[in-house]
Image 1 (cartoon, helix red, strand yellow):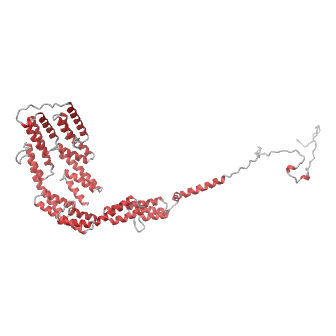
Image 2: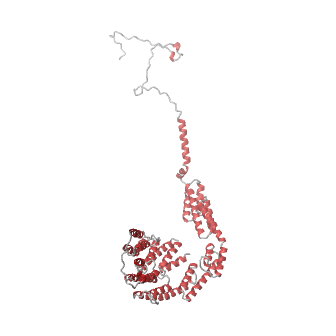
Image 3: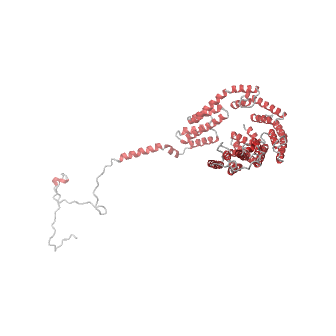
Length: 564
């Protein structure tokens, strides 16, 4: 609109004069003022044209300060408890260097010392830099365990002073423990034993004067006990030399008397007592020469025994029978396997002859032959079957044994009661189960051998019992092969012994014995390589019994003695 007045307007605007209001009430409060004008409320506008929101009422925030205080406390606590981890995040050149040197010293076996380069000193230095560091404290524990192991080794070597010193250091680092207590007790016992060495020396000297050289209470064993407890004991060392010389003299006297068995025993005693004795090489040479002579005589006797066996000259009067020859061979070499096998063959031949006598109704001759065979091979399966057959004949016809020349009726099948038949079937079944379980000869009464014999006692002609008994040697051989393949040498040893009883003279036993001896020798080699001298000695003994002349037996025996 323009400010011009419209001439045609019928109601021209009335002019309102400006006024200053009531100047007399200028000092009165604003609310009490009255200027005569209408009160108008004008709402302020937002810069963008929107109405402004009414001012909000301020809220009190009293919880904010406690919350901030709790956060500060939690932060401080976290920093305190995690200080080791935080410290580990910081570069620690000196500490890491010392710790690395300590670990290297531990690996090198430098456990203790006084020059600052031992593992104990370095780990202690690292602990001084950071007392709460787990790696440093664990390193000290490792040093303590290593000291404990070395103390135990020193005790086993008879070095009691060193053992005591290292045990004390281990106690300091580990703070005690049952292992350290045990070691201290062992060291105390060893020191007490040293006090007894004087008494042992006196006992050994008395035994030497009395000529008692071998045995647990002999001079050799007593002097050796003193030397083990006190390696520097000169009296005991001289006593051992005296015992060794006496054994060498006895071995030479035995050679002069052609007593190779006594000579061999004295040489083995000397080798066990003093492996480096200067008399041993000459004695070994004499031993080899004597064995060569004995082997010639032994081979001749064994050949004569085999010839007599093939010609059927089994037993009887005179010294030209197979039985006499093989018995003579055992006198030359009590452990000779060929001679023992020859006697087993003699027992088998006698059993065959006894069965033939039973077929001819000569029970008396059969009984005599079986009695002789039982002296040579009491556990023979064939002998047991023949004995059961003979017993059955005795039950049916007692007169057959008393009057062998009388005409008697042939054997008739035994008539069994229902109870006997049931007991017989149960015994055979139990025997078969025992055979599968490997209980061939043991336990007494429940072994396959005893159960089959019990069945034959009821009916000596029962085919199942006879067949089962005679088949035991084959079962034993199969179980021997299984045990040997699985490395169960003790079980294989038992099976071979069972076979020797059940089938004496079986030609296969020699080869089986050689295989088992080789396995024992292999095991002895492994045990000796591991430092297990006791186990190696036991394995060697098993091999020596099976093959005393095996070259590896002699070699391993010498190596075992040299390692003492």
